[in-house]
Structure formats: structure tokens, C-alpha cells
Amino acid sequence: MDFGVLIFPTDKAINPIQLAKESEARGFESLWFPEHSHIPTSRKTPWGGREGAPPLPEEYWRTHDQFVALGACAAVTTKLKLGTGITLVPQRDPVWLAKEVATLDTLSDGRFLFGIGYGWNKEELGNHGVNFSTRRDVTRESILLMKELWTKEEAEYNGDHIQFEKSWAWPKPAQTPHPPVIMGGALGPKTAGHVAEFCEGWMPIGGGMHDIEGGLKELKKACDAIGRDISEIELGVFFGLVFDESSVAPLEDLGVKRVILPLPPAGAEDVLPKLDEYAKYIS
Image (cartoon, rainbow, N blue to C red; front, side, top):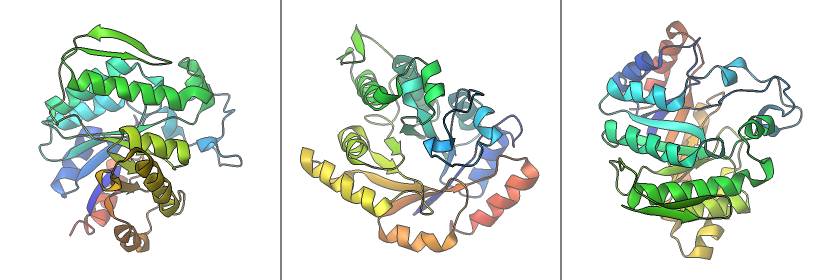
């Protein structure tokens, strides 16, 4: 089992470049950054779309751009894998996103992990021109188009939401055929179907927030329906707020290959001791 760390990389937190160096020096497998382009001040959508959720922490509207930050981290590391946890795919232009992914994977010598999600904030999605009810379908078509762009010399795609004429686009990713696409979030039947169709991994939230065993059952059904072997899909778990050490052994029994531990969106004086605390799990 590999261990990585996740932080909201903000203007108030430890410099992402310093964090990347320190994470690699301690032997962590991967470093993950989430994203939000902005958070509308109306706050109509509760945190995570869950009624009764506590107020949204300010790190959600203070994050650096994922790809710029991860690119800087790639330049100062050699082994550390670099992940988006997660990229809000329907809020991004898929053609530019495909180029960003391929560029980062190329410049990092194949160390990029592409964590994706649909998004939960209705107003944020709306500001990007995305209808909340179609965000899952837009995500699906975006990923299918990106896979064409990554793997074909002449790529084209025609869907219900995206039409893309035959075109050339480089660079191609360093990883073959492309970086792994890893779905974040809980699995119901539709999302399980998407993971089975176009993902190489699933990354739910641990600590009891997501039903991992139930999600695996849904994923098995979805894979069986299209004739895919569920063993082709790598399982990882990340802890959004609190890490419970006692939960590691059961995750290993479920076949989890990667555990991602949460770091506070704070300065080096708070983050580095937490890295040291987590480093014991690596051995």
C-alpha cells in the first residue's frame, strides 16, 4: 500500500514547491491538490451539497491553480507522483484540459495522476455555463474526447454535449496510453457505470464518509455489464479531514492500493510536523 498526502494549496499555506520537496524527501508516493475556480458568496449550495453541513472553510476559495502548482512541483522532484484530487472536469474546456494533462505528464516524465470529479457547487458550475443536471454527462464526454486527443494522431468526437472536428493536438502524454483517470466520490449506479467505462481508478473518501464496500459492489455490477475485469480498476482512498489509523488494515483487506492523508492548509510550521507524523506509515 502506498501513502500520499493531500493539501489545499492556498496563498496562506505552505509553498507547494517546498511541500513537494519535503514530501519526496520523506518517501511519500504522491502529492495531491484539489481545486475550485471560485466560490460564489451567495453560499446557496451547502458544503458538499449536503443539507446541514457546517460553513465552508475559506481554503475552498483560496486555492492556487492545480496545474500551475503541480508543474512547479514537478520541476523540483524526480520520483514523487503528482495528482489532482480532484479536477472539476465539467468546469474546464476539455481541449485545453487535455493539453494541460499531457504537458504536465510529459514534463514530469510520466508522474501525473488525473483525479476527476463532477462538482457539487451548483452556482460555481453555473458560472462556467454548466447545468448541474448534465454535469455527469458533460464529464463523460470530456474524458472520452481527451482520450482521443491523447491517443490519436487525428482526433475527433461527436457527442450530445461536445462536437469536435478532426484535429491535430500535441504533446501526447508520457504514460501509455495516458495518465490514469481516477474518479473521486461516492458510487451510485450511474457513477459506477462511468468508472467502469472510462476510468482506471476509483478514489472515495474514507473515514465512513463514503460506503466503500457498497461502492465496490456497484462497480462490480457495472464492470460485469460491459465485460470489464474489476481488477483493472485501482482502488485508492483519501481522507478529507481526519485520518483514523485504525482504518488502514480494513482498507488493505478491501484491496486498497493507495491511501492519501490530509494535511492542514497551513504554514510550514504546522504542515511539516504532520508530514513527520505520517511518515511512519510508509515503512
